[in-house]
Figure: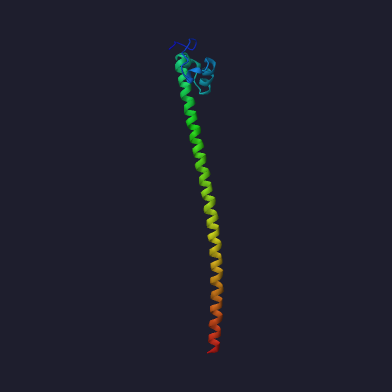
Length: 116
């Protein structure tokens, strides 16, 4: 490794492919001070940046999974709502049928009493 950000570092991986400027800018984006950077080698800084990129990718994947779960939940709620609405309509129809039958029973009971 090098003693600071101005020495060369091996470029054997994609994490090490970032230029010194890119590494410094990424570190700034992650709120790391330049004073802190001076105590790290460029290679260490590149790997730390790579780790942050990996964490960001994992977070984005988790957000995507959460979004998918929310979408599935919304679909399930809509299905339940539709099913519940249909059941509610069936119940209303059954209640109307019961009321009609009660009216018919009352009418027939009155006719029977009148006939006796």
